[in-house]
Image (cartoon, rainbow, N blue to C red; front, side):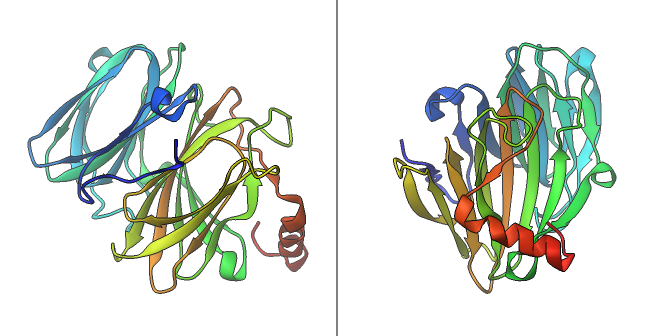
Length: 271
């Protein structure tokens, strides 16, 4: 299948299962709720990060916990997110107390754990890169977070900048330098008629796609290097969901471009 999924309705929902993607772990959904709407989520065999993209919801996981007033940002560009992490082995219901938009970040799992509320104040925000490759990383469910396989980050890319740069990959289990991870990118644009380019490619060019991504597009990275370039005049956002056997985001840069990261280190700027 193509590495690009585009919703039929630009204001509507999207959904991806591991079977759809042809991989083992990641599922992903976005739901747009009118006030009072409700959604039941089956978590029998998967863990979930419920990330509130905008608005406010209540989340009820039964014996796992209940949380009211989760959310509050106007859009994904405003601030780091509110959310809830839920381990596998149960279920949850989400009820919108206002108009809301929620991302459900799934990873197949057979491990129980403890549900946790995710608060903006507890999310590390990192400036990465330098010059026209500067971007802001929000570590929502980082490797140190007590999840099983699930990893989640939000990335803000300023007008005209490169992101996920240098091109890098994480498709080989070669610790500590690289971890094998599936990954999706859920894109948003501000204003919404903006766009970015995303390239996904392998050394042998069995995959070599340069995609024009718009607001609400979902890009799958089954393997290989990947990189994003944001159109001038628009701010880009993407929600990354990753999962594998290791709680690591270690990646390998494409060899011809490794010098870029070395130059950042030499200049004393963020990596």
